[in-house]
Length: 192
Figure 1 (cartoon, rainbow, N blue to C red):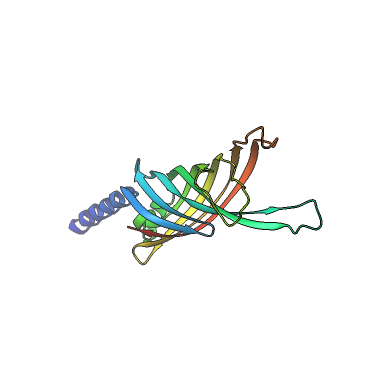
Figure 2 (figure 1 turned 90 degrees about the vertical axis):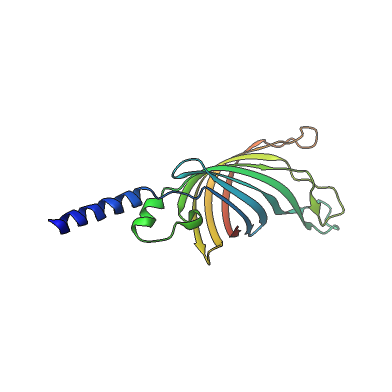
């Protein structure tokens, strides 16, 4: 009887611990992607919900096609700042704990809605000609995976498809404002 009582208390305690799997209260860090570098901050909203914010710069390339065949087309590069805010739901926390895997630094699968603003302020370019990034606002539902290794390092893979609104100046370009956008990210990060 004593063994059965001890076993039932142990199982209840294990169920309580598993039910309490939760995200970190707050995370600060630096992320480096294939075409971006940023500072990130993530704060806990609820047991499995966080608010992820990110500010950084991204590298963009563009080609200038000249209609005159005597002029060679140019491929140029520029950097532009961006700001992203994304509520995240870490749906894989409980499953990772049940399997005995680490959830430190929010290392789990998540879904999110990424609100991304690309600015045309403070651009840096390798071209002497004036070319500018068109400011845009994107709303992108995403699926992501974050894993942590070596205590402070993490990697993330994010895939999403959504909507982008471009703030074109009608006098400069008579282009469509609305477009679909595919978001694929691979990031390596350091968490403080």
